[in-house]
Length: 502
Image (tube, rainbow, N blue to C red):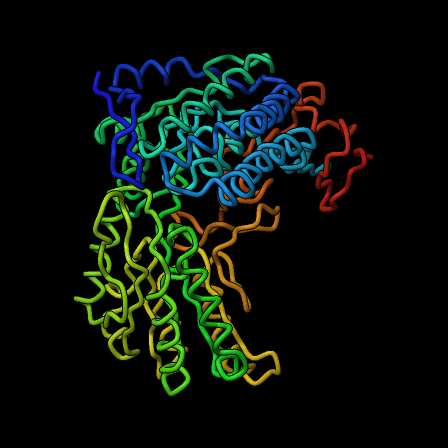
């Protein structure tokens, strides 16, 4: 069996332990071994999720040191104080949703004697994790994982080869938590890596119930094509440039502060966030010129951070080169940093609004890393109309109301092009909130109606809508019987209630 090693991105050196690359025989066996969890007691699923969270917290120091070594992300505050707590919070929110059961949206029509609720797919969910969140989006611990299990589906986890040791350590805790919760060991199975052809074959295998992917547009669309061929729903988070518009009044009121806010967001985590502000739109003029000069100076003075790996470095360099070829002007950065490891200069580019409108597709290329493109626009509304779908869109406007007219024209256009609309705030933070939408129109995701973050909404991606027509009450799932089994919110004859059927 082929093997591989992780690479320390700070030095470029291979780390010691090797990990297997699974072939089709191993993948086929895992598919066959996945248990049917439809009859698993929800209390056992909740106990697993809570127990797993506790185990991760108990091993936080070792996990964070390992993740730091494999990703270059700082232990403090990023991994220990922010990302690992977010991960355990997601697991516990999923456990709470399992116990409450309201995520199943029980709906009862007494006049027609028809009742429905969401339930398990009856097949495993394939989760493919990214490289930039070794905990919070890990294939064996992130939101997709937690939500698939909350809907009582087994998980086939395809870990990211950038942090295999971290994933393996977390998987061991998951296996122990499964035993403690009296769930089958094959409820969670892990592949550290698979060849591309095996991954595509797996994505299109009819034994699969759904897949969840976070990564590049090219990889996501290839998986989606394979899944579509077999009728398997695929929930993909792919690429987003997250445009931010600075309106004239905001620049006049607080231009210097906005420069600092933008630069901090662009270089945070070496720019390796799917919500990094990759496109900034300024009204052309003197205020924009001052903004660009200040941002250029600030970014040039910022020390380059460590990138996750060679693939990120090469992809960023290719994207910056492509943006310049499409008409962008480079103000600072634009090159890899010499020496060991993987680093790239913080990069600022600009382009005229006319050039952007002449070639909007090429100039909306995602440059994943510490880079952003500023559009100097004569017509802000025209730029907004030319934008592709994204995860976020933001507008900074004057506190005193000077920008209200242009805001009212921009906001509806951006609202249709982004999953999350922000006012006076950078997009890089994604709150773990029931109201959060971490999704959006294509090409940000494959489906604008679903979110990868935010429970209970994110659970329903991995559920089937089950309808019962004139079925005797004792044969119904407990949430659809006349007596409410707990305090489940149910829609009974058009009214949401926690009461019983009368």
